[in-house]
Image 1 (cartoon, rainbow, N blue to C red):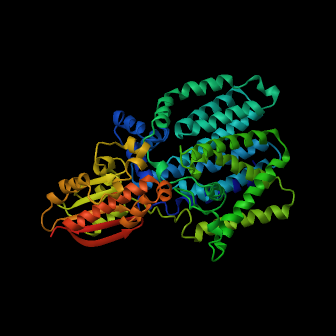
Image 2: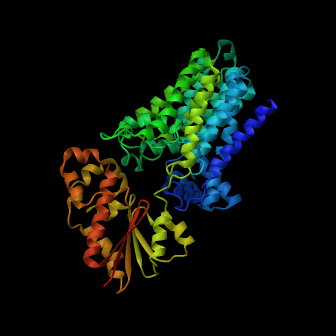
Image 3: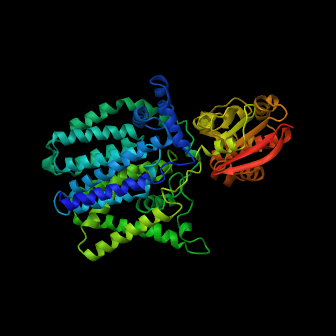
Length: 560
């Protein structure tokens, strides 16, 4: 590496560090998925820890990583976010290596710097470098899989093959659907390597990957054969998500982090005006990058067919799973493919012959991306986790909650708030009608969450129309009204994102076949639980108002 290239790489890495450090301490705290990741990693080892992993839907490696991190650096929110920031920064260098390995000689340094720069300023990667989740480490491991795949493609030595095996196994244990990417990646490697290079055909390494991955088979079988999670119920598939996938990865505008808007084209034109901001900041950089991907394929190299096959096969498999309702089509679920796309953009740009056009496109892309990140209130460093679970605890603290007061959480169990309740030194009784126990509270007869998951729309349709629900009323009276004395207060904590239907709207949905089929079940059941609890509490207690913060609303009642 020439001295000036080394300096450029160092400056790019420094830029990536600064962008990831900016506003890393989120005042709203961790949102549910982050909190759940932390809570599992915090469980006592080994029994509770392994039980927590088995009852979750994510592969186990990240929990081991986070547990080790917390043993060294404790578990403050900032420390936990650094566990994602560090792999995010390392990824800048690994993508530089990937691009250099692809080209080997011609344009190698320029391509490497381009890949490093795209990684450094990627809004998508910056966001997940500040989140206590699996995706930053997943990207790093995926970039190492890509790097050693390219090395095997160029030189299938035993060393390269075994390093590819190591990182492939790590990826399988890091991301639940990582095995899909690994399987297609190995098959594509074998298919497209030059015939003379197939003397070492990776057979031993394939066998090793299968053997080393066997401990994960019972987990995957239980997850897919006996689903017990509710993510499929809050974000139905739409074709617009395919377009948001590319704008998420290639532009600074993030729309499909947890659930994309229903229409991509409504972001451009809303029947009244054209959204110039979305066109400039989302479409322009995305078109530039997609054009570079197309340009990358013009060199006709065999390795391009390998990369295209891996991308297409993995992408279509996840798309089909989403179409059949097996998972949500979110950009982050396909993060293993992002290193390939970054590499192709870098290849396309570095191989351009027209220097003026090359500089112009790079400048436009960099200026638009950095301007949005620095200035926009919805940039990845400013994007507020509206569901941050410190927010409702702060409301309770500001309202002066006392030991004799009682809290009812809707949608999440009380354990989701313990970290911040303890942090604020609060003491009070709490219970919940949450996404795990609602059959025990609102369904008139015996029922469980698995049954509700499989057939909830049919089972609960009449329940949603009940004006008096004896089981729910008994729950509220037993845990709240009968235990309260004059002056005691009751707080109902609602997550507005999932309980937004009032009684009238809920009834209209239930009575309309088309609407009832379209609306995710979880929105219906959570809205019913919230509405019923508020309606009954208004009868038994004196309503004192409500208080909002982010996606949370806290209702206050007092015993007269």
